Length: 186
Image (cartoon, rainbow, N blue to C red; front, top):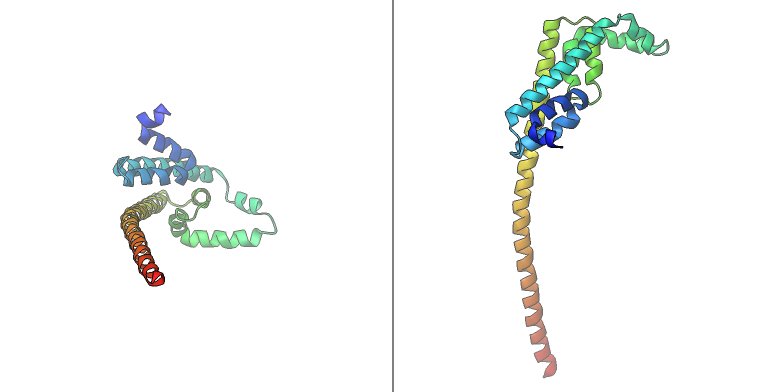
């Protein structure tokens, strides 16, 4: 546990290599709430993601394109061929969007390598995807934290209003009871 406290950004880097968004989400939350430096979190997570993605890209380059068809099997061969055509036409867009769809990132990296996407195209699309996802998560985190803080202020005011409500009800109950006792006792 002391390694996490002593080297949080190294921990984020290593965690991102193996767990991805599972580490990124709490790290961004901690940065947005002021416990970690946001720039360091973004830099370490982006570097780890780029390194991990490159490994999957090069793993895809080691497989022949026919591997995909064999893995898909005969029954799914037609679907795999259609997906392959789509990837050839819109590979960079699919790579970019894969960052936003949980569970598709690794497959998109491998497909980029498998289909021999030009390295420059790959780097640009992948980097833009990583930065766009990180920016989106940061904006969402700031929104949630700011909404939560405003909600806390509203709850404080609500507690005061509820206390005032109880005081009025108790006072009203006392006054109405006194008036009714006077009427009934006459």
